[in-house]
Image (tube, rainbow, N blue to C red):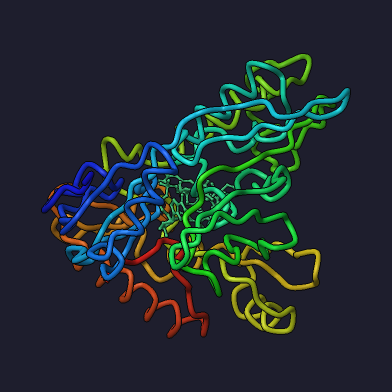
Length: 339
Ligand code: FAD
Ligand code: EPU
């Protein structure tokens, strides 16, 4: 049976927390996964699905079965004069897929360049960056129901996508293993440059004619400037979601803090940058032992080397408490906390 015991997860999560998995399997084909799930010993174990480990915090060892998804393959399943449908294995690296699409001039995901992790995890929190969300190119996915072993197809309306949210993070959490994702890319080049800084970088790069390659290059440039490289400093990107609040509450905060940046949403609510709230509480650049808050981006908690998951979790809770006390806002973690 393809089941390893007492495996270190240190290199399998971008926080580089040295937690252990009691049992671990690397899954390269769906049939093998179906067979394993039928095994009575395995059926009783707690299960955790892992992709690239870039949005996960292990607060302690995982006393169950860690299933790391490594299904490969990018397959063109349909095309017409406007669109291309790609069916992609859950284990394919997200950025590898972006590079594939940019090279072929398939538009839609160039603004999502350099997001770490796997294609199978992209629907879970509906990844987003620089004015684009994954749900905009989503066609369907195939997922294995853990309790029955049956493979089910989910269309867009089934997934309840929202800001850093989907049905797989809420009512169906932990119930399905995503095997394949089908994306609808476009041959028509529509460029998303509304995120102001993209235009500034394109201008600095002296781009004369927009292309998806140029947008991808600009996004990569911005991200390399702003975000810590997890291979050098352990982190999982934004630790919390940006809070979305009612307009009257935002107005009240604006009266008290006139410099508070705010982003009106289509539904009339207001999104606030959690990084600003955290910075105002004095946390930016904070360091205690091996844990800290990144000096250039207050929404990113970091492991400078050898930190425990518990220490990061404790820092996250202290940050939540101080933001709640100062602004009356409860920050919700974006990172999946395993405790
Ligand atoms: P993991 O961390 O392995 O898993 C995340 C969650 O998905 C877990 O709950 C896991 O159980 C579940 N899961 C994973 N694979 C599957 C599967 N096949 N089936 C079912 N469940 C599964 N995110 C953004 O949205 N935008 C950003 O701009 C962004 N920037 C980042 C920058 C940095 C430096 C880092 C470290 C992270 C960033 N992230 C960002 C977060 C992260 O890259 C995404 O959430 C990514 O989709 C996680 O992929 P993963 O494969 O590493 O998932
Ligand atoms: N800001 C501060 N202090 C800081 C950093 C930012 O006050 O230290 C304020 C500034 O006003 C800035 C605003 O926050 O204009 C927004 O900052 P930024 O553009 O860096 O984006 P963010 O809101 O912090 C979000 C996503 C990122 C995504 C970027 C770009 C969330 C939780 N995070 O970050 O996603 O890459 O926008 O679209 O929505 C992730 O999810 O892991 C992630 C990195």
